[in-house]
Length: 339
Image 1 (tube, rainbow, N blue to C red):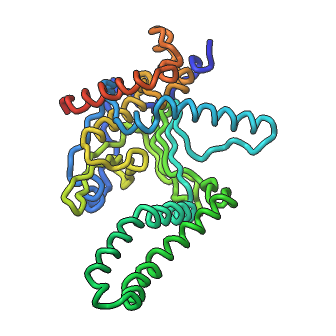
Image 2 (cartoon, rainbow, N blue to C red):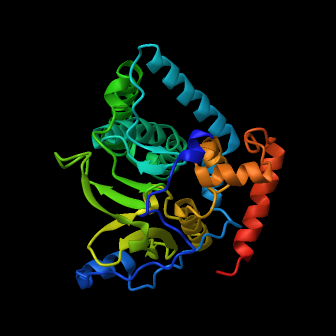
């Protein structure tokens, strides 16, 4: 018997064919909390249908990306086994849980300095030159080059381009010569969805709380509801995102950290179905490249794959053309699905 087959799911694991129990305690949520996280909407239906997948997940975790990540993970594990730096990530996505962790805020600030400064200094250079030439042809003959330079060109360079160049330079030097200062291991994760136990766990904020890594709130997936919420931008476009909200406690989890907000409502609904399918231990893991490396570690998935004779490297051996056809077919199903 394989290790996966001998693993048992906890009694709190989510089972989609079981009716969710009614909350024992009455809601202790303030109206402001509820409206802020749900916008007064109805909870999304928990369904384990697997016919459609969010296109963003298929783009982000393609077969090529997963092959590369498998190789890196195996390399880190080998180096750790040979006495190197311990392989102890703060966050992961595998067949047991989805644990989200991100770089500390100071790391993101330095990365924004480099890449934001580079973007502003390069991509905006041509529009800046064209704007200056246009103004010169309109004002140059009246003001003269010296006045035009000191009163129009120089202030823009001094107050905008010079700071952007400095940010770019500092960020580049730090990332190149002191990468460990930027890519520091976070003090702890932010949240976790555990398939094997069925628990949704919120951790104390690793950036602001000294209790980083400790559990702040925890409850079975049965006790949480998913909500599709919207946020308009200045152009009037609606951006959709998914929030996970506890039924009775003031606990909420914005899942846009895993699935960024999008203007496509169907993408977020498909993401919710993916989460439900992942948590449901009566179903195998969602059959997408992201989870292929871990299918043999999950008991339900292992039994399903052995029975169906699934190729363990189905996605990783797929050609790029075949995968593009799969994504096109999925996108067609997604937009024609009856939500």
